[in-house]
Image (tube, rainbow, N blue to C red; front, top):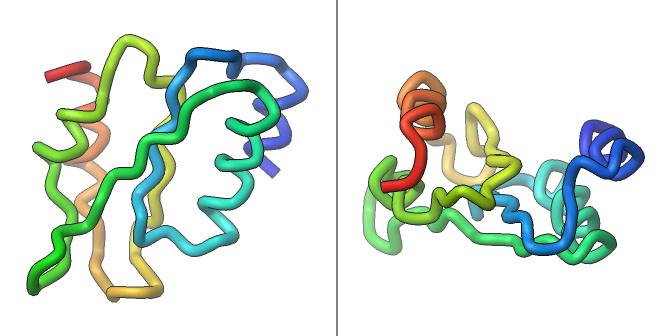
Length: 99
């Protein structure tokens, strides 16, 4: 629903970037991927670590952020891993901007 609002408002355009946490449920990731496909925006995947405890890294997010970042999509709690994402730290990193 939110992705559809962005589509209608034309706030996401070709060349913009959408960062999606790869542990997101399809119901979260799918609409953003489709928005990128329709607008020419680029999807960047914020990857969960490949080793236990399979968690997110704020520094990995910071490395993805750029002046082209329009959206960062993530779950608060991953239904795949059960990880509770530190949303306060994510918001702080986004507000600080690119690394």
